[in-house]
Image 1 (spheres, rainbow, N blue to C red):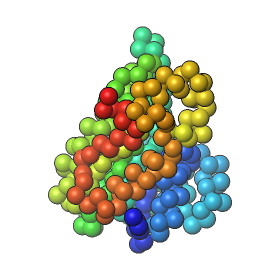
Image 2 (cartoon, one colour):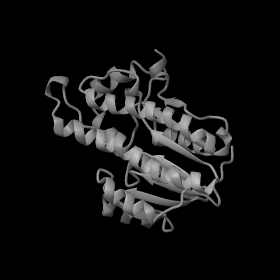
Image 3 (cartoon, rainbow, N blue to C red):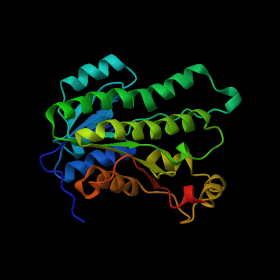
Image 4 (spheres, helix red, strand yellow):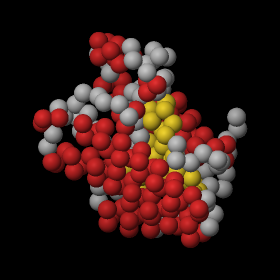
Length: 244
C-alpha cells in the first residue's frame, strides 16, 4: 500500500530517539516536510546526518511558554505526531508529587499545548489535518509500578477522543496508537532479562514484542488518507495483549 505525504508538513515530538525518530524518518521518506522536535540537541544533530532536510526544533515540552513560542514560528502543519513522553515508574505507595507532576506535564499537558497550537492553525486554514497521539497498552491495563504512567496514558486516550469530537467538524482527525513493549534501544535494555520478558510475552497471543516499524506503520496509516473515515480510535499494536 503506497502512502505519500508529498506537499504535507509534519511535526513529530520526541523525535530524537526510538519511535519518534523512526516516524520522522519514515515521513521524510514518504515525501513530507518534517519538523523534528526534541529537547536534546545532540539527538537532532545525529538525525540531520540521517535525514538532512528535516527541520530541527530543540525545546523542552514541559515548558508551556517556550513550546508555544517555538511552534508559533515553525508551522503551519498538516500532520502531527505527539510522541514525546516520560516513564517514571514507582510503586504506588512510593509515588512522589514531583514524578507525578513531571509525568502529567509531558505525557498529557504538553500534548494539549502542542495540539491546541497546531489545530488552531489547521482550523484557520480550513484544510483539515491528521493528529496521532502515541499512547500505550498501559492506558487500558494495570502494570506493577506503573500507577502514574498508566494514569497519564488513560488520560491521553480520553483526550484523543474529545479532540476527535471537537475537531471533527473542521475535518481534523485525531487517533492514537497503543503499543505493547516496543523494541527500541531503551526497550531492549529494559526487557533484556529473559524472566521478565517471558512473563510479559506469555500474555501476548503472538508471543513477541513489537518492533519499532510495527508502530511507525500504524502511525503512517492513521495519518494518511487511507484512514480517512477513522477518528477517535485507539489502535492496539500489541499482538493481542489487550484482548485477553
